[in-house]
Amino acid sequence: MDGILMTDALTGCAVAVAADGSSARVSEGGSRTRAASVFFPGCSLLNYAPALVSTLSDYLAQAGAVDGTSLLCCGKILDFEDDGAARRAAVDEALRRAVEAAGTERIVAACPNCAAALKRALSTEVGAPCAEVVALPKVLAELGCRIDPATAREVLAAKGFAGKDAPKMWVHDSCPDRGDYDFGRGVRAMLPPEMLIEDNLEPSSRCCGSIARAAGRYEAALAQGARRAEHAARHGADAMVTACMSCAASLASAQDGLPVVHYLELLCDYPMDWRVAARPLSLRFLIENERKAPDGGRDFELLPAREGEAR
Image 1 (spheres, rainbow, N blue to C red):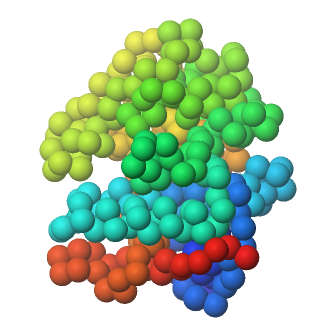
Image 2 (image 1 turned 60 degrees about the vertical axis):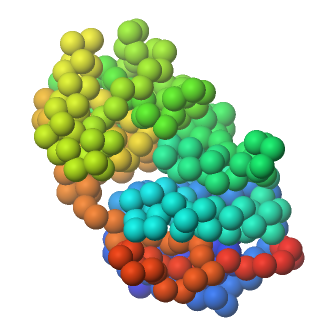
């Protein structure tokens, strides 16, 4: 199985993921060591672009930004499962124990939804999280990463756009990034200044349609996505860029007037077709002690929570 092979920093499990994100093998034979800072790519990045997980994990480790990577699911999906609230509470508790046992003080989250879910999961009774959760784009920008204009043009050309040396990019800010907007600000910091749009310099989130889609209101979801693209086009956008893979898939599915890219496509020269990529996720690694999903719930790859201190 070519693809990712690593030891999960929060569970100590050895995990192998296929290059296309379609399958995985999990072994409990790995060992967990102290990981003060952990990269948390999230399920979407792992499923849609496992090669980027490996690339980013290596880069962040070499830059001294993280000590390891965890492929765990943040648990947000459990809100849509039978008995989801109780199950998510148990998973949140297991995640807190794993973070504490690994000595983790900071988690670098690639996904805005994961960041919000982790902040919730890691909050203690007094409200202070047991570990800081930071946005990957912010970390990459602080490390000096910048999107190359030529690479951006090539990625957009792969999506059918051509004709401008400096295409104007509208940054779509995701709903869970509201507040500090560290994802959106990080993306703006990495984009070439000439590609930014003046009316879009300050982050402001409007839903891409994902929430309506999750509620089964598909027509409303498509309409929301189309409105976001129309709004961007009125302000001179040639394309839309986002830090959320769910947003990228929703916006691309709702309209074909503007190309939609995830910023990692531009940064890593890794074009993706979001209409194809927006498939049901094959892999979700959930941390639980219970080995069998409850009746009515979907099956997950379970990474058992380990008790005890990190070595």
